[in-house]
View 1: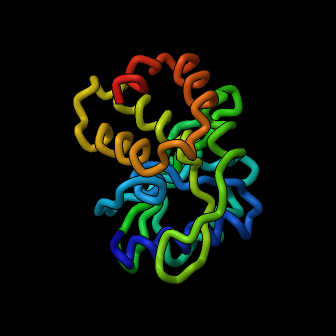
View 2: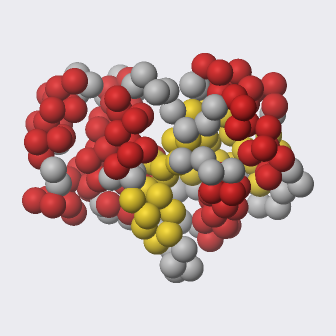
View 3: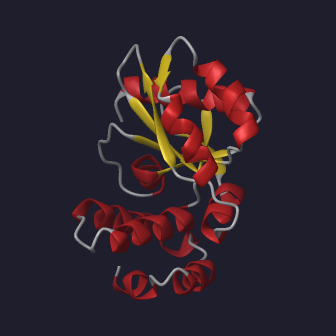
Length: 186
């Protein structure tokens, strides 16, 4: 991953941690951490962000990051997503607001673990291998099962992690999320 993207990610994570907000790196960074590395410039974070915590979080980002407040406020209220852009590097981090009513969001946050994803050795909370497989299978399905990139990410994690995966957890949650057929195919 591009060093500027990593610096941007660490700056957003620092602001989240200073506000006491739980987060998990997901998307391509998480699949690369557990599977086969690939280049990516985007950073996806699942964040447990409530409306009352948004102002202090935005205050921590002020100066370095651009955030469309008119997008962030409704995103937090609706458990949707919004982006923050690093004005120094122009790299963007997409924040997906966790929905407490979705078991996959709760699981992803609870099961995330600190992992050093770059040479600095500074750990960030990263989605578990199982949860990133499930999330990517869900995205693959939602996208009409056409994204070669999502599919390769899933296969890369399954290949690298192999027997270390909690297969019972994967099966149960794939069934609940209606992606069990894709898991078996992968």
